[in-house]
Amino acid sequence: MKNVPSCTYCGRLISRELTKGGTTYSDGRRICMLCHKSAIETPVKGKQLLQMVHDKLELLGIKISPFKPEFFLIDRSRLKSLAGQAETQGFARFQRETINGQVKSFKLQIYILKGLPESSFITACAHELMHVWFFSRNITDISPRLAEGSCNYAAYLLLKNMPGPETAYRIKELMEDRSPIYGKGFQKVFKMAEDRGVEYWLNYVQRFRK
Image (cartoon, rainbow, N blue to C red; front, top):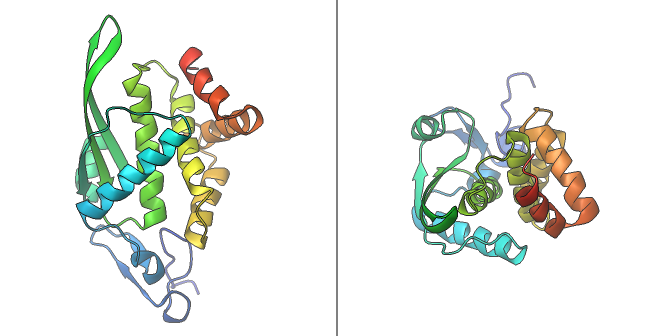
């Protein structure tokens, strides 16, 4: 089994019997056909899902308004050049006008990696929109661990109500991530929000930011 590749997005071994085969993207990502059937390949579909993620986060109290983003599906090399890192799946560019420290208007651009299966696409959108929520409130001095942990927790809130093995794999990745900023940050935010509630967490990040 050593030479059988696994899917980047669900962890299953890619085989005709198990996953109906698979394919490799030009940037080297391997994806099984079970994940590929929900891959987001068009901006129209991507923007529909982005709006859905925005609406679900708003119901949870994570409100971004007005919400009129420019949306782009891009390849891995362009995303790396924007975000400055190779393994990211999304990037948000936020330009704002402030008066007396208050945000009065902003321009929003969302970039997501092309070809992500739906669960990974939703994860990326929720993560980036949480960053936008911080920016829209002029929260720019938040610690990286709290910021990235909060963004991953926003993704978790979307994923936990979505059934399926791909979603379960996404949640498992979040729970088992041991990286000091993204992983440990998520685990601390998860404990806080699960113990005290989403409203407490959102108030906390605005008051303490560390």
